[in-house]
Amino acid sequence: MELRPRRRSLLRGDRNLGLSRHRPTEMAPASDGLLLWHGLYDLEVRYWYEVDCNGGADAAGFYTPDGVLAVGDNEFRGSERIQDFYAWRGRRGIETVRSLRTTRHLISNFWVEAAGEREAKAFGVISFYDGSGRAPVSESNPPVLIADLLNICVRDEDGGWRFKSHRLRPVFMGAEVPLSMAVDLTR
Image (cartoon, rainbow, N blue to C red; front, top):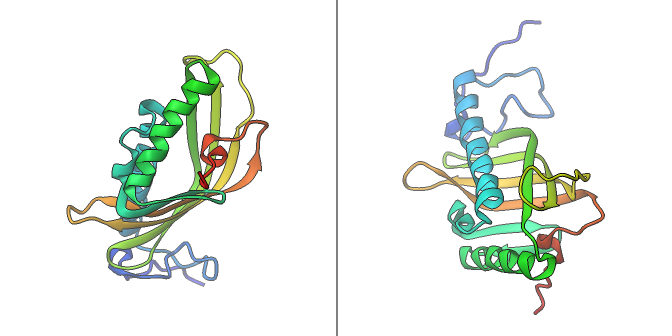
């Protein structure tokens, strides 16, 4: 059996990429698949860099105006709510911990799937590390959270990618609860 690359473009709405669980032997054209993967991976990496290194002060800019950030059962809908969450997170970390926190969000097993001409899905695993003090943090702890990452991304008018839906579904929890899950949304 000869394996042949698929001829349809990932960026033109092909739903059955080489990543399909049902046809693992089909391959998408390398250049289209790499462009899509790179665009969505770049969005994900830049987002978590913003959160880890700038406290998420500009995190809402990575979302569509009606975008959704969800961590477990907590859902922040719309860029204003997302911005409010990151502002609260920054204040809360200082108020409760009383020390500088260093965080890192690590992405792995990242794969993508086109869902339309201007829409795509991204899946992966995120590991969240957190510690007291400035880097390098002297005591290393296991991850606070390991979660499945489930994204729906759309292209904006300038051709850049934004999160329409950015969901983290917890798989493993550490001893500390991340602030994104500790916030009480009923208040």
